[in-house]
Picture (cartoon, rainbow, N blue to C red):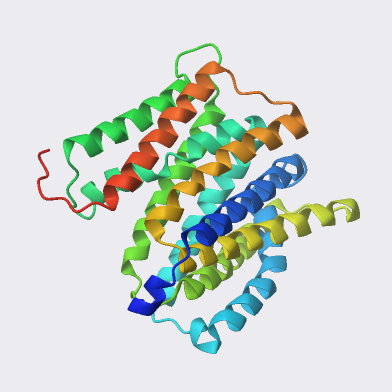
Length: 299
């Protein structure tokens, strides 16, 4: 993406950006809720394949409308394909978790992705994190442990799936460092969906179940809501300061709790709520600290 001009920065709209990101997260949560329902009948890769088939023409139209044909050009086709594969693995694990776990619990554990990003940035990119940053990461993983409760009678192996989702998502986010900064978010958005379609087309046939006609509205809803979510979030980051709009990703936990209660009467218990609060708090702390200039890494 080209560097924003002074005029575009001055015209940035924090409130509009927040509204777009919040709406986008709501749409994505609706897509997840539909995937949880339809997941009792179809494999995750088949759901992702049909989602991509329906969504790609819409995403292509949005990209062409906002960025023109130039937005389809890339010098990183191989990296985009790799990221599409990582996205398929991450989303498949998340959909598998949704079969067993409540929507809010799955979403809360998956929100640990920024913690993995921070840890991996140190191990892979050799970036430095100060003591307060590591304390935030530790608090976030403590929140994961509170929700997962390893060793307790209520422990479920399925709780490790959204944790793996978060780790794979973090790898996918860090892989974006290899994409030239001149490429726009529209380009990345298109190739994520295109890569998802390519990989799911290969993986889906062994798990294929002929879709019932009554289920097609659910597949269409998953594609529609996921596309709207991606589009609104992209727009939010285009018109609002990233440091302001990024924390509103966590509104997804509120929507997941509400939809989980409305559709399945799931109610997070006290420990689940405490764990989610720790994860969200640590994520917000990491996001906030990431916007501040660091003069002393030992502080």
